[in-house]
Length: 401
Image 1 (cartoon, rainbow, N blue to C red):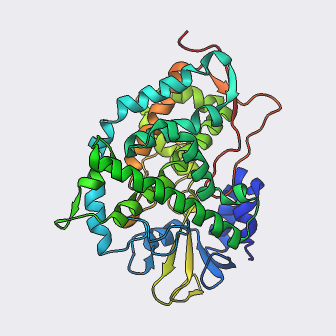
Image 2: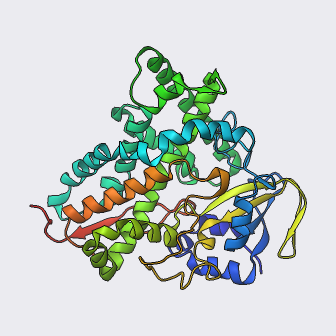
């Protein structure tokens, strides 16, 4: 079996329907080496089975994150690129800020943002939901959490697209071109964050930036670089992932009237619905790690320093772990999916993301009648983090008029 990874990472047809590729990898090439320009060695080993990915995610001593995530950052992002033992001290600081209790305190404001955005389109009966809702909703929630003024939303969207969808922005997949774009974008972000932190020293607020200015780790205040490296990761990880998930979830609901009707009729099952949609869609389809020692997985040699790609989305649809994984089963007992990664680097914002998804669906169901993709229209996804180019939806008369 050969794997054309560059095609897999850039082919829109695969982004629209990646599940057959995942199945082919799991069944015929559960570990496979492929050329990859972003790797130090020029190759990457791709893992696709649940058991192998669980082992890799839970073994940071064998698979390290530091250096694997390239976005133009000047230093390792905190805490994503920091491995144990230093990783723990940063998570001890940050985890309480995104705990279930802390996230619940954000619910009213999150719901108000959803209501406001939906009120702007409800009477139209049809819109590009990507532009009208799935982009601005999580971005505005994120700006509130961190402490950025909403007036800067458009600037953040430009920065976000440069970091996450650099190939589209640059019109090229040449790594040197992308690195220049990432570096320029990162430098602009560091400068912006620097000014924000200065403001929060003079004018504290109820936000992440203020907490970083006031925080201590092991009895010492954070350095300015540590604050910048935390904010950079929040920006890179927090803006596009919920947008992508909403795009995927709403597309599936729009194409499956029975599923949508069931979801509307059982609001008490919203949490299970969100979990199962996260598992089956997994828009953040992969994470990267570097091997810290020589090893062999499924007869494929992995040398110390080799880049390893963990296909989270393939693992989440592995029939060795999940019964009938292609079926969306809201009563599924096994919710041990990797939509938020796993192990020590499990997504810091997973509780916030779940709450955003639940509130978004609750408000959409409460405000819009049954929605579908208009005849003659289609939804096409961007490879990588699977966001939609556009999400044309139409709906029946609103629920609340």
